Image (cartoon, rainbow, N blue to C red; front, side, top):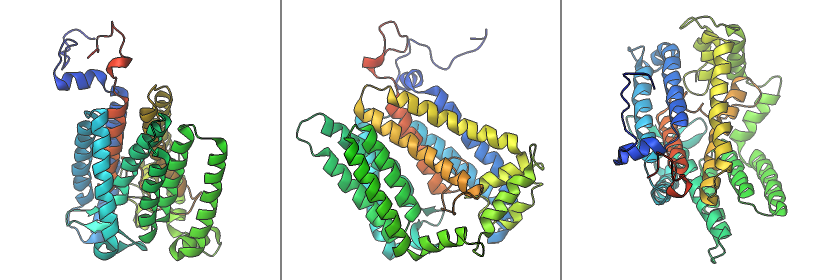
Length: 384
């Protein structure tokens, strides 16, 4: 440590904040804060074009709101990361129950947009409960899978399936095929990690394929998006403009606020923020962003798989998988590889629900991965 540097906490400090500091995964914490900062930087590029479209005279309307949501997300992440394992399970139960209740009421009181009724208008921002139910559901099904492994008669697998079916049932009513597929994929991953027989995984995979086919024929909005994407005459306006923006940026980009394609993309500050960043900051920044996401997710999965506790192993893995899948889906849409899904880029895209839900997700991860007494060596200065 450099001479003259004053560390905020000494190793002998046993205050709750000091214990949190010495036991939390500070590398992941710093990486997420860096991603939140990057989102703010990119918001400066998109806000001046997006704000006038809603009639705002303030060019940085979205940037200012993004700052508020990003700071709140960081505060939520740190607060949740201080929870005990029992606290993680309790808060997840409350969030799941609350989000499920709101999703049940959405058909009657929800705000309709983009072919679905998925938002609750709260004046200051639109709450999307499905964003919050995802991390809560993962923690709860991990808990149930872990309980079923103990052989104490708890029907953990059955309860996990019930929690999952309730969630996707309400998602399909909205309808939200993208979130349904995402949650199903993560549920299957957690099921696999829990060590179930291979025949169960094969059966679940087959059911998932049948389910996707069923979605295609039963949901007109979902079907039209796929047909328009694969048809040469389909409406591929946004994805084509996004891909053109990435190509236009080249290696070093056009410069801050010098991008032109963002003026042609309606959702450039949300779903297509990656394209805006690629055009103005270039390929090298895009690759750095992908590398940072990959570092967080891959490192997190590696640490999760080495945890001795099945609950923490399954829950942490599932939470990291859902972050990684959202990144892959968003960037794939921006690259015109898959149809638009209406899925934001974690920590980067504008959106109150997205930013707050990701703060919750990473807070749960940091709480689950904190060092516990049984994992600390006797001579470890972080022992608590």
